[in-house]
Image (cartoon, rainbow, N blue to C red; front, top):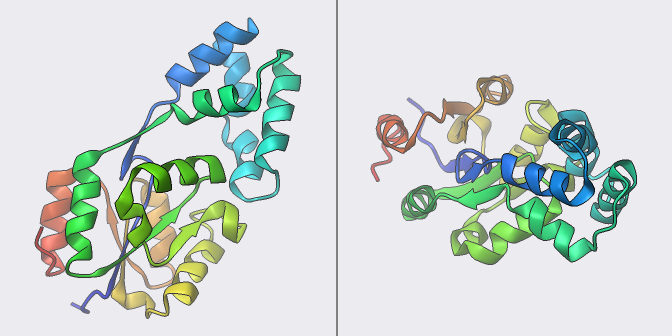
Length: 202
C-alpha cells in the first residue's frame, strides 16, 4: 500500500453535524411560509449550488431568499439562523488534530463562505488544514474533477499519496477517478480502524 502523506477531510457530516430542520422551521415561523416553501427558497441543492460555487455572493443569496419568501430580516439575523444548521463534532476535530501530529491534513468541502468562516472562528484545528479546498473558492463542487484537481495542485502531493474522507460514496468515487485514495465515513470508530490500515493510529 502506498504511504499516505496528506489526509483530506470533508466538513459537513464528517467534522460537523448537519441538521437543516431547525433553521427551516425558524425561517418558516418568521416568514409565515411553509417548511417546504423555505426548503425550495434556500435549501435545495440547485438553490445552494450558486452560493457554494461562488457564482452568487452571500448578500445576493440573502436578498433572493428574502424576496422569494417575502419577509424582512436583517443579514446578521439571517446569518445566525442559517449557520445553526451545523454544529461541530468535538470528537472528530480531536481526531483530525491527532492525525495532524502524524500527517499533513487538508480539507475538501462543498460549502460557502459563511459556514467556512464559522468553522475557522470556532475550531482552531481548522487553521491546520493545508490546503483548505472550499468549493466556493475554487468554483467547483464534489464529485466533479476540478475540486479534486485543486486539492492535488494546491497540496503539491501526488494523488496516490492523498487519503480523502467523505460521507458520500459518490464523492469518494469522484476522488478515486483521479487516483486519490478514499474512505467513506461511517462513524468515528470505523474511521479509526480504516485509518489504521493506512498506518495512521489515533
